[in-house]
Length: 151
Image (tube, rainbow, N blue to C red; front, side):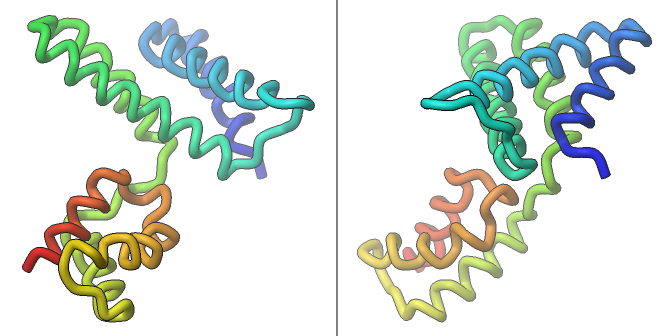
């Protein structure tokens, strides 16, 4: 079984062979981020698949935020490029939870914690975060928790 990092290398090679500039540059930048993470700190180490997934998620989030910034600035061509790079990265990430699935997990956590009102956000987040880690973005989770506790 190949690791996620090996899969990225294989996909990079394939993208270069097919002259897919968007895919190859996106994977190259992502592998650079993975390597940077590996050499950060006291000693060099090999990242696990879970750690590589976190790097991929961080890179995808950067692309989303950059696309929003380009849209705001009226640079639609650059925003489209960032969204396309985000789509390439999304192929490596686990499928995100739908709003209904996220609401069900949050409702279960609210019931388990017995929290009510805004002061219970922390307790509910503690229960929800491990269940949805990597499957839903933090902002979406926080918004769902706030909505569930608000009413």
